Every structure is written in C-alpha cells, then in structure tokens.
Length: 468
Image 1 (cartoon, helix red, strand yellow):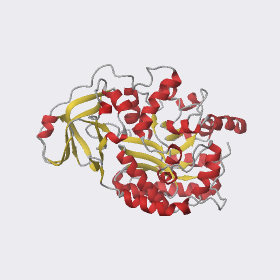
Image 2 (tube, one colour):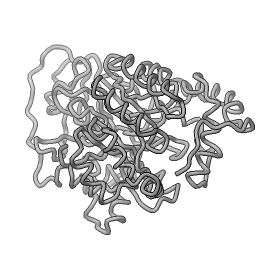
Image 3 (cartoon, rainbow, N blue to C red):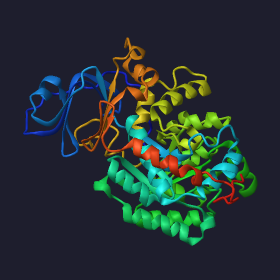
C-alpha cells in the first residue's frame, strides 16, 4: 500500500515538444492539462496538447507541437481543462430505475420496505435499461470508469461494451442463495474478465459481512487467490453495523474480513464510515491491495453520524476512491459532487480547513480512485503510456470565473454540466455535450413503461433481510 502524496510544493516539470510521427488517432489542442510528476504532485500545463494513438496517450506536449501532428480527429479545447476521466469506485448502475423511490427513510426501512422488495421484481431487461441510463448519466458527468456489483451482470457488461465505458464488474451474492451464489459470482468473473477489448475487469462480489457468512467469505478469499481476482464488497458501512457486529460476533466487520482472509486479497471496501480506530492496524497490515470507496452524499441522506475516515486511512497508506453508490440512495451518479462533498465534509469532520484541500481532492479523484479499482497502472493520469481516458471541462462560464486557484475552481466551482467532452480508450463518447453511444430518449421511454411492474410491492417478497 502506498500513502497518498503530500500537497505539491513546486510545479510539475515542463513538458517537452515532440516531433510529428505519422497520423494520430486524436489530438486535443489548446487546453490546460492536469498532470502528475514522479512524486504524484499535481500540476497544470497551460496551452498544451494531448496526442492519442491506439487508445493510449502518446504524448502531452505544447499546443504548437500538437498543431503540427496530423490527426484523424482534432479537438480545439481552448478555454477547457483536460482531466483524467473520473472514476466511480462503487455504484449499482441498474438502481437508477429506483431513483427517488425510497426517500427520507432510515437504512433498515429503506432496504426492507422498499428496495429489497422491489429488487425481487428485477428482470434482465430492467437491468439493461437501468445500466444504459446510468452510463449515459456518468458519461455526461465526466465519469469514464465505474465499479459495480449487482444482479444480472452479464446485462451490465453488454451495456459497457456497447456504450464504450470502462468498468470493474462483480456478480453480487448473498449466503441465502446457497452455494450457487458464490459459484455464479466466480463464473461471471472468469468469463467476463478482460472483455470489451480489455475495458471490463471483474471481481468477486459478496454483498457484505452481514449477509454473507464467514465460511462463504473465507471461500471467496480462497477463490480470489486461486484465480487472481479482486473482491468488492460493502463493509462497516455505518457505525450501527460495527456495533452490531461487535455484539454478535465479538469483532468489527473489518475484523470479520481479517479472520476470513478477505483482507489478504485485493479488496475494495464500500463506505467504511463504521471503521474504528482499532480497525486501522488490521487494514495497515492487510496482505493484499486494500482500498475504500467513499460516497458522502448517501451518508448525509441517511443521517449517519460519521463519514469515511479519509485522513486516518491516508495515514496508513490505504487509498480512498470517490464513489456515488446507487442512485436509489444517492439520487445521483455525479462523482463531481462526491469530490466537492468529500473535501467539505472532511474539513468539517476534522475541524481543519487545511484538510482536505482541492489538490488533495483531485488526487483522490484521479490517482487514488484508479488504484482503488485496481487500475492504478492503466488510468488516473494523462501521461504517455496510459489509456486515453480523459475529459474536457469548460471553465468559461460565469460560475467558474475568475480563476485564481485552478484546483479550487475545479473542485468547488465547476459542475458536471461543465464537462464538454468524454473520451475512453481514445474513443469520443460525448462531444460538445452530445452523447454518441446511448439513445437516452428511447431508454427513458421503455423504462417508463416497465416501472409499474418493477416497483410493485404488493407481493410481499424481498430478496434479503436487513437486520444489523
């Protein structure tokens, strides 16, 4: 595990001009580019260009040098900032179909009275439509990668393949499903790994320690080691879960992950607002790549008293990525908002306006989020050799002017609607706010027709019981 980098104390080394080397697939010119130096400090290169070949960033150079490179596609990005594509480190894309359905409820009622009864109605078609709408929302908000665990994940994988995004996907399972649940999660992970031209990676996805028994968690850890798969699950979501686990099992949810071997895998823990001080040594000595995803808007909605302990996790070298959770709890898949809220809530929680700074928030949104989903060597930076996942943000609007501190403008003034262009693997998925890979009106029309059957709760069934 690698600790987060400190606040940058000096500018990033200047970029060098390049010599033209044939026709590039894509050249973006005239923009300001967020870059990282070899100590992970962020900086901004003004009047720059990004050259893309074969889905990879070939160079970050000057606008003048970029203008000399012949390109199949050229984007004039004057007045815009090029950022690494945002990463939603924990969500449930099909749950956009439930947006606004379960409002102003405590967690237990939210699950037992609304969400889990409705999810018992889910069909493959519902999942397809929900995933399409979610991907459209994220593309428009500058999200290029997401980590998802849910049901019918072959349907989500098909949507990812079609819309052009990057994703880590896991077939969620509960112990109440019997051995078939874990078997299906493994079968999906092996079959879909490195699909969609390498844009889909996979994970084993036990739901949580309160819905998956120790024996199944231990089996998951063994299978993760055997097949080289990461694990993505909810754990220590809130302090109530931690207190209940202590009362019933004598250990916290993080303690459960340690004793079952899950912490010795590459594990992504969703939420973690119930992580205690006693959990930190367990996480620090974890044998695998341990990361936590924070989705602060949902914690505020549920009235949870705490938030993800970002500073404490940083101090022990655990990356914290930004997330939204599903739209049924968060109402939004806007990672831009998660970035701003994370910074603000951390300042309030720590009582320190110097933490979390805008530059630190951008580090969590880029490098740390990429690490959290196991793609730290692939995305998260705009640099030669990285996959060309990037977004262009327009800062010419009145709400982003004047610019005294570009990092602060991006985190606290810019909004997802300021994203003009979204690119994954060098492919333009949205240009000048026009979506190119998802037909939103058609998705909305069909989903509207399906909602009465999907949201019916008269049957009295639920897929699981929330009892923590």
